[in-house]
Image 1 (tube, helix red, strand yellow):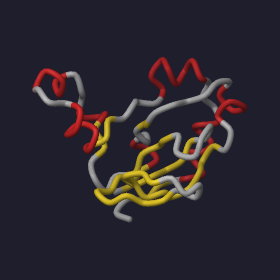
Image 2 (image 1 turned 135 degrees about the horizontal axis):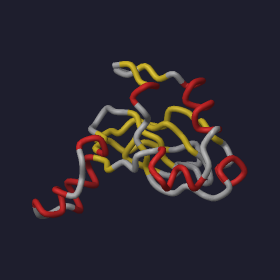
Image 3 (image 1 turned 90 degrees about the horizontal axis):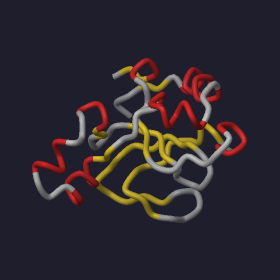
Image 4 (image 1 turned 120 degrees about the vertical axis):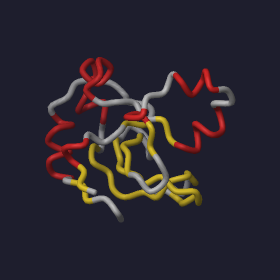
Length: 121
């Protein structure tokens, strides 16, 4: 992996968040490169996405991969199996938060950018 992630620091940071703080912007919602290429057909669609939201191939990001969790995955062009057997366009690294409903108070659906303070290139 090209990126070193501080998993312990990331876990402590995520455990301090609430569902409301996540929706208010404590975590930035991510747009993966393959979703941008597939769904954004015009420049108007792409203009709504900022650069800090884009996850390029080879970059790690947080996602609700298995169900009611937050896991670190690495975006790839190839599909890989999750531990549950489902195919996704990313390589599963590890689960950080096992139960989002218990930790945050509600489910977190979607992809999120890992804050820069927890990633070293």
